[in-house]
Amino acid sequence: MFKLLRQSPISARFGMIMIVLTLILAIFAPLIAPYEETKVVGDVWEEFSSKFYLGTDHIGRDLFTRMVYGARNTIALAFFTTAMSFSLGVLFGFLAASVGGWLEQILSRVFDILMAFPTLIFCLMILSIVGASIPNLIITVAILDSTRVYRLARAVAMDIAVMEFVEAARLRGEGNWWIMRRELLPNALPPLVAEFGLRFCFVFLFIASLSFLGLGIQPPTADWGGMVRENAGAITFGIYTPLFPAGAIAFLTVGVNLVVDWFLHIASRLED
Image (cartoon, rainbow, N blue to C red; front, side):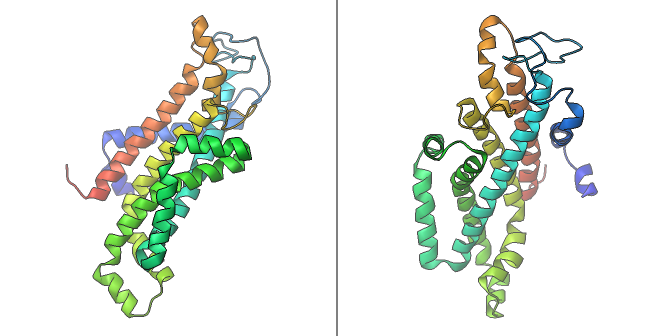
């Protein structure tokens, strides 16, 4: 691992630094934040000062505190959602590739139907019906995002399933579950890891978009997308408060993409 890190390009190292800085804010939020997450401590949209590092928001809460707690809430939600979508997509993709036949046809048609609907509109419709709670948000986004993971996992697994070592395992009498764990997953891991980073960026931006539309993380919980929506009116008065959470979203997205590009380069086995 250390050898691999030493061989990483400057862009990947820069992306790692960006990710680590954001994770430090998220993990140590209670220690870093000077105030409570929802406490009103000043006037509306106060300017920068030694008391308020980034000023205050639309109701007088410390913006720096909200940014720090927003990192924890937004990243944690995006990570758990991506992990669930990957678990579903990889499981069903490997099942379709290893079993084949009628099971593959049924799974493929179900995921094709889900992909036929515009993701944002479909998600807004479901959340409007079942409610915009955290569990509903995670389950809904995970199921919709698993369709993209399924297609990749199935395509990669089908290429591996026809190789000789997989056929040898079948001739030994190994079952599908064993083949999926011991043969398909290890050989499909590099592209799946890179895809996990890409899907995390998509889910992260998607949840921020839902929060901006009012159906993501609900107030008073701090969330970067919701903070942009709450303080959008400040732009009218020449106050740049909403640019801070918007910049934080872009900052983490760029950092993850820089690292993902490096993983894609490794997975492709191409030389510079």
